[in-house]
Image 1 (cartoon, rainbow, N blue to C red):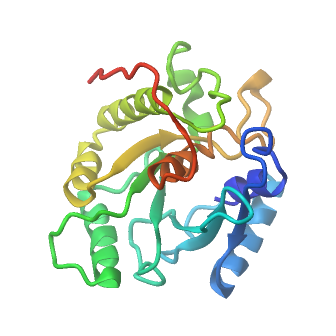
Image 2: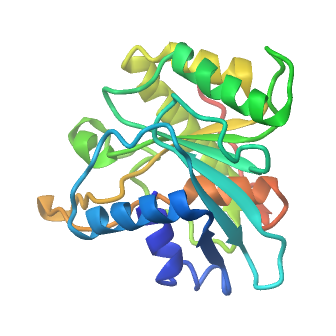
Amino acid sequence: MASVIRRVAKGHLDDRFPGMSLDVLGERSRLRHERDRVLVAETVLYRDTGPEPLLVSLRVRPRARPEVIAFYDSADATATNLAHADGLVLAVEPGAVPGDAGIARLAEAVRAARGLRPHNRISVPLAVVLTKLDTVWDMVDPGSPLLRPVPRTSGYAVSDGVDVHHETTAWLGRWNRTDLIRGVRTAFRRHRCFAATALGDRVDGRREPMAYRVEDPLLWLLAGFGAIPIFRGVERTTT
């Protein structure tokens, strides 16, 4: 999460989205980001950060409407400040992926914050991000959508996103996490799966703060909000 903020703050997306800005919202989010920022700089991965979300406000242009996004790295979510979140990002690790019970707790927190009835499907879009992709590079086929160059469009490339979604859900299925997929589909009207790494660099086995595809979930959310253009291309629908 800190790596996403770092990329926007340092202007790594300016060539595609000039003027994009991101602000951390609230004292708790600020303190958490400060800690995570140091960990990213030191290339240290820290696991248990608790159920509090990290809230950010993202603007594509200086005068554009801000989009509020809540980042979670635990499915044991709290309802704190979720009432006004436009989108959700849930980061999960290989080998530590929550099942449908964890997703149910996250859904309950969202419903509680927004005054929804139990079992109502949630209209807030959810991006599920499989993190630490660098720990399983050797398991990924060289021709996988997860390894191909990121589209350099000034918007969101739907065909690439669909391919990455199907590939990521396939990996979750191989790791017997079909319960996670089922729980997400049951609770959220709009969702998409992504794979990313904040620290790993697969070139020559080096490890350094080399973020890979960490901005993909943000771009998908922004496209859904109508904040950036959508480039559809040819969508592949492999199962």
